[in-house]
Every structure is written in structure tokens, then in C-alpha cells.
Image 1 (spheres, rainbow, N blue to C red):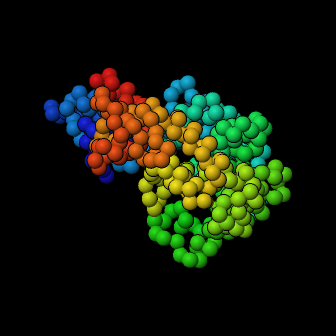
Image 2 (tube, rainbow, N blue to C red):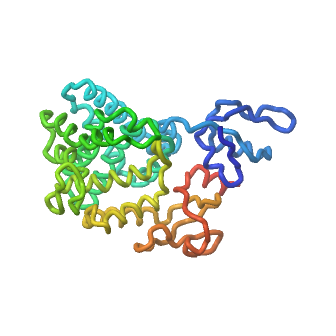
Length: 362
């Protein structure tokens, strides 16, 4: 159980379940234990002067997605659910050593790509999801969507955008054979377990090679852990020897992994996640050409975005400094200043628009 202070941290209570009944001073029950907290509940609690609220963990990420996405984008939520269920079916068949039937999975994901690319703001919503339930499946979906996005930014044909997106979706299918503790334990992997994990590109390739998927999908499964300086695995490929689709997926893979909750660590704030990608580019690990296109788009997307600061206040990103991604120029309480001037404060996350609108109304 966690106690959330509503004055500055109301956003942390959203989409969580109440740990006990909330009563007014006169003993009237305002909210009952087990209810999932919404913006209207927060408004009610503030009206009655309730300052703190006890909560359990978050609802499932699919329930969070449904709550966060605006009504006009509900087709995206429907397509996401269909893709998630299809991936669950696909991974189950792969686990049983069956040759996977990909047609329905890839058709449903094509619909999801189309919905996501209609509104880039949906990518921000995906980064706001809390918890690590269904991590491997949602990571696969998010990497697929990010790869399709990058393919579009690089002016690929519509056909290639779909192929690259599907390659991202299936890049980690070999992880189905990874040790069970990889996703469910907070402990460090043993040497033997890590050795097994490193086999997943080859396993994924073997699962897919007889399914009739396009070559970029096979390349993605086999080469997404290769690095531009030759330090990756399985084959230690370098530079232009790495297929472009694998270079794109490597970027999407890193970004989504560090900006998502995992069983062994909390997600990084979006700006820290971008800095991680940026650092990997300048260390020679990730493609400069592909990576800079991605970073330019993401910083452009975040410009104007409302964010939470670590003290609970809202700020707006005004401009990014490409050389210092964690310290953008922000607008706070009517003043424009570099974030680093606020000693000890950091950007915690992208603001949930529901709380931002609630605060403006109050």
C-alpha cells in the first residue's frame, strides 16, 4: 500500500485502486475500497479537504490505456487490445514448438500501425503506462510501432513502413525460450541464464524462417542486438553490414526498454530515455543516421508538452538543447528558464492530460 499526497502528487493516484474506504469528516462514505481512482474522484476528495489517499498498485496496463486515451482515439485502443491478444496466442504456440501462424497477428498489427501513425500523441500515452504486467508482449508491440514511426520519418514506402513495423513486432519472439526468471524475478541473471538469453536472436530466426515472412523480418530477429562498433551479438557485425531494419529496431528496443517499468527497475523519464539513446549513438553503439532522425522527431514532439517536475509542479517544455537533453528550457509559473537552474529538480514524466485539465478547472 502507498499513501499519495493529493496536493502535488494526484497524478500518482490515478488508475490505482483505493486501499480502504474514504470517509468525510461527518462519516459519510465518499469512495469505497477497491474503486479505481479517476479525475472526478480526485476532484471530489479535494472538495472535501481530503489531503492523502491510500492506494494499491496500478490497474492493468490495458485498463490504463483505455482510461488515458481520448474518445476519438478509441479505435487505437481496440486495435491495441487485438494485437496484444494475438501476440499472446502467437507466443503460446511458439512456446509449444509449433510453427507460428502469423497471418492474423500481422493483419491486426497492421491496423494498429495505421491508427498509431494517425496521431503521434499516442506514442506519449504508451510511455505513461505504469507497471510491468505483460512486459514482453507490450514491449514487442511498442518496438513495432516505434520502428514503423522511424520508417515513416525516413521516408520509406507505405509497404516498407508496414514490413519494418512487423519486423519490430516479432524481433523478440525468440525470448519465449528464455529462462522464466528473466521477466518475473528482480534478481540478477546467473551466467547460465544470461547465456540462454543471448540465444534468443537465433531462436527467433529459427521460429520464423519457414513462415514466409519478408527478409527484413528475419533480419530483425537475428540481428537486432548487433551494434555499429561490432560489440553486439550474435555475429559481431559492424556498421553497414547490419541491415537497416535491425539498426532501427535496436534504437526502438533501447528506448522502449529504458522508458518502461521492469520487474527489476522503474522506468526512466522520457527525457532520460532519450539521453540514453543519444549516449549510445555517441558511444558508437547505435546508428547515427537512424538515431538522429529519431531524436529530432522525439524532441520536436515533446516541445510544448506539459510535464511533471519531481516536486509535483507542472511545467511546459519550451525548447531542447541537443547537447544536454535532460535540461531543456521550460516554462514554470510564468517564467522561462533552463531546468538545471532549479537545483535538485528533474522532469519526472509526461503529464497525464486528465490531471492537467482538472488542475486548470480548479
